[in-house]
Image (cartoon, rainbow, N blue to C red; front, side, top):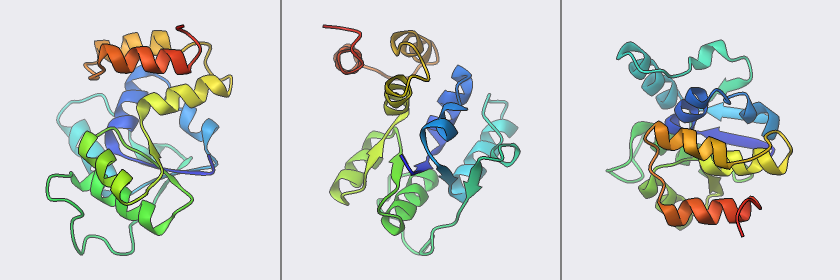
Length: 162
């Protein structure tokens, strides 16, 4: 991937897994909008284990040109909204979003996207991690919602399940 536009939850989960550094290894440019920076700062202030983007030299903070004129969908958070707005402005970029509604909006708008699980799959395909399964186990311990069906499909795609 050349450029990724990352939402809050993938940054949080990858940080908590201890593999946040996968992002700059699978993409040339990692961009987050200001709303994601604010959400992470709020999480940090509330005592959550989240990364501080200002301490990561490989993250670029970029404000969408149209932000925040109008929300794409009322039920989306500010982070998802700004990531999708940036994606509309940067059609070659891939949005990294986990939120189900944000993913549906991305599909409707024909925005390329993946999520935390897609990052792990790309890391395996690139030889950056040996297996996806141990990371899925750890994600589930962090209360990442993953159905048995989705887990099996991902493991099949990773070549870890037949």
